[in-house]
Amino acid sequence: MADTDKQQLSMAASAIAMRGVSLFLSAGRAAAERRVAATATAPRSKQPKPVVPGSRPAQKIFDILLKSTRFNKNELEALFTMYRKLVTAAQGITPNTAIGQPPAKVDGIDQSTFRDVMHNTFDLVTEEAILERMWVTWERGSGGGEGALKFEAWVKGLSRLLRGTDDERVAHCFAVYDLNNDGYISKDEMFLLLKNSLLKQPGDEDPDEGVRELVELVLKKLDVDKDGRVSVKDYRDAVDQEPLLLEAFGQCLPSRRQASAFLKTLNSKA
Ligand code: CA
Image (cartoon, rainbow, N blue to C red; front, side, top):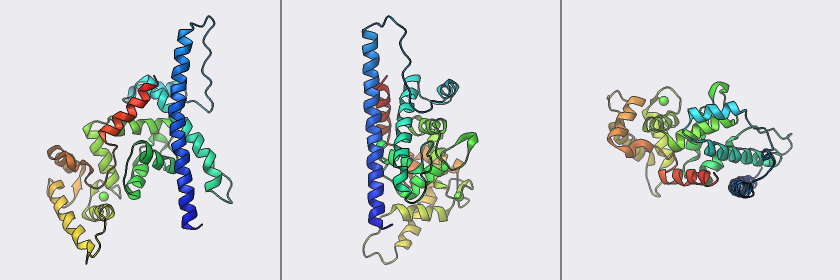
């Protein structure tokens, strides 16, 4: 496929995901209005259960999430509505993205939907490599694997992303930056991350030289125990001293402002 075709496809996918999000927003509003209307007219008969197309996880899952995340009941309901829209939208575009192949059934948030939500909903303007790492390191629970995110794993991760404690935020960024998952951010990893995130200056004789210098500078700040690599403890200590170091190697958390704006939309539907 030509690059322009791919680009157009991915633009179409983004457009559809965007539509998914706006559908989600308007659906939530409509549901809220219906609830208000239902209350106002004080129905004599038993209120009918809302019709939920697609499979809804067992109530048990909601109860678990209520305890294990920092979302309240209304937020979880709104998140489920959003999840369902996103999955439905992804299923709708699958046949177009897999030309000549039988459409794979997407059951959950797939990687391209994930990327679109991070970009469009959380305004995460970051390198593809970081988004790839966020996808790979997103905890999938006992199911594990690298496949689509089911509702439970999706929501648990969102809780850390949007309402995480300082420790959880450090652990999240550290996991993203620890490219080979060995528990340390090495100089090589820093080099790759920084090289990725820096714009090439035209006329730079040896851009790598500048990156290597930067690695030494950042290492000096992060390697608190001076063993030449950065452990999660080093990282936590360094961020305690200098909070700006949290996302030293590329944005992998929504801004506080973006997070609270999103949480507000969840609650506006309650
Ligand atoms: Ca490592």
